Image 1 (cartoon, rainbow, N blue to C red):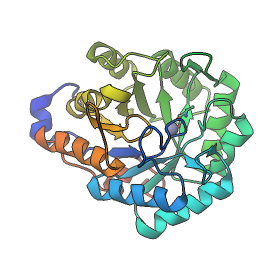
Image 2: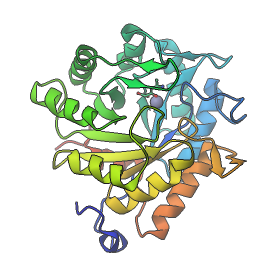
Image 3: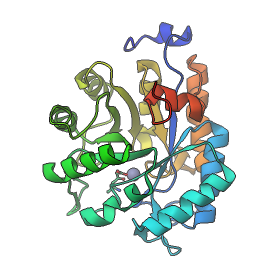
Image 4: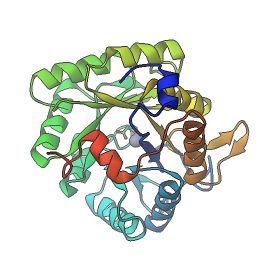
Length: 289
Ligand code: KMH
Ligand code: ZN
């Protein structure tokens, strides 16, 4: 993969673009945007709209009906079944991050469903104010080893550059399998900024053979998407990261956000991957030789 080769992208030499829809999150609510889904039905509808607009992966948090975040395995099972009913082929990637303050045991629960993928948060980060998202090295090792045991492909969440270094170290210790798939989460208060300079720094810091996606928080959603499209990475958008389709205008659905990212990709000559193509690109189980 040639970084920053816009001409190459336009000639189709890059992998097709894998779009992840982070449809729900744990911190965003209907007060931010009334279309944020809580119930299994609402979640499945947002997954379907995202899939129809070009998403091949749904990054999944789940909520109680009143919107409270939960990592309950039963609730994940219910939501996954509802998504599968309307959208059988999409890749479902549960969060093991949950929400700030949840215990390791709570967060681990969706792994019990042996999903194809799950997130693996590779370091502790301030989230502004007194909020700290805690991921000690031993926790990361336990999450990583459990994913290896269950054949779950981790997506390593990177809120700052040192988290890439942690993932590389834990790879060498057998807690994460190479090749690693990263997600650069850019623009979180307390994390790395959503700048082109820092994007290049992150991309240049991952081992050869790795894959990556990127998401920008809030107003950075589409500038980071554009950077990743031209750099040969993949893209994540969705209400978890940003609720606006453009300045001051709320998105009607996650599908609208995915559609905008897909439009950027098409304009830059990058084709969109189907879920099956995404499985091959990311080396998910069932697609290995
Ligand atoms: N909600 C954040 C505390 C993940 O999904 O793994 C963690 C998060 C990352 O969203
Ligand atoms: Zn998440």
